[in-house]
Amino acid sequence: MSGSKNIVYQVAPGGRLSGSARVPGDKSISHRSIMLGSLAEGTTEISGFLEGEDAIATLNAFRAMGVAIEGPDGGRVTIHGVGMHGLKAPAGPLDLGNSGTSMRLLSGLLCGQSFDVELVGDASLSKRPMKRVSVPLGEMGAVIETAEGGTPPLRIRGGQALKGFHYEMPVASAQVKSSLLLAGLYAEGRTCVTEPAPTRDHSERMLSGFGYGVERDGATACVEGGGRLAACAVDIPADISSAAFFLVGASIAEGSDLTLEHVGINPTRDGVINILRLMGADITVMNEREVGGEPVADLRVRSAKLKGIRIPEDQVPLAIDEFPALFVAAACAEGETVLTGAEELRVKESDRIQVMADGLKILGVDAEPTPDGMVIRGGAIGSGRVDSRGDHRIAMSFAMAALRAAGPVTIDDCANVNTSFPGFVELARACGLSIKQED
Ligand code: S3P
Image (cartoon, rainbow, N blue to C red; front, side):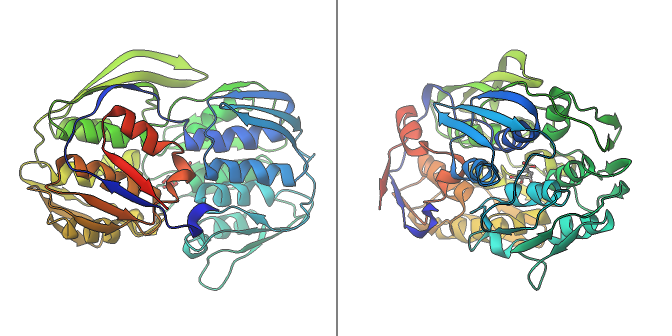
């Protein structure tokens, strides 16, 4: 994985974002398209696939399990599905790099196979909590061994008879929900998952798209084991989580007027739009349409004077990946922004509360981390050198902060931007950010 190379971003201060841009394909949907396409009967044609390292890690895992996959080539992938029981034992451990989604979703899917498998990841993934999936999967009859402390590597024993059950999730996590539903496809009877707050529902939508019945009743989603998936075409929208950096950048940089094309605006993902609008952002949702079972739109964003807010806790799961960018918006807003109820940010690719607070302080921003969020008093952004700690979203967020900085911003450890946003530097530059990359 690219994480071993230190990529440094040098961003000159000022500028504005304008024109139109299409950010890469949705990461969550890209992962799921490979998983369901591989298990389907027939040939699945995918367009708009994210050619980033995380989604490629999922793709390579299925290749290693014997699935013939062509591409990716310009976002196109063709999968020759092997059916629910057609996967083969891989020759060695499956390396999922930096990708938490691959590891958590695959654990559910793989505990219903006939073979043993080991899942490994990079230094960041190897520190992330996996008991949130291994414990409930164990209740279904799966046998999964984690390292001490409940972290990867995961050793999954095949040939287990899984039983459906009803799980009340203690955390609002789409990865846990999806992992259990994928295990549920292989379980006897019905598997139901109830979430404490709405989380992204791409798995449910895509299972339906592949002809697999998912029953939804309020906060509960259920599947019946033993069904089949039928191949279909999957058109993946641009990732709202990647668009978020540009939504924030154009909001904070005076004179900006930028249109982001074909962005997925699934209501379980649109917290960043809602929160930015509450702060006074000028975002217009245009040409709303539905593509492959997912709502899509073009987003026009113009610069605006932002104000600090208390972020509604019900928006937290709907914007869970967008807080690094939203903290930068808060740093440019007038007054205080308070985030609570977001302790999950501490177990993402980095501890996003601590790492963002550290970087913001280096840039002269009044940012106080709390156990479950942050208090930021908006004001001037200075200049300096910050460390992204190998977290893609933190690197891109600080790049946007330079639009309002007094001097240059240097960002260390940016190689992992390639996990979710290949071509970020080129696209950001085309929109008006003065960013250079050094090895
Ligand atoms: C994801 C769910 C979220 C999110 C992650 C992708 C998914 O994680 O942070 O980037 O694709 O299901 P949690 O489910 O752990 O909140």
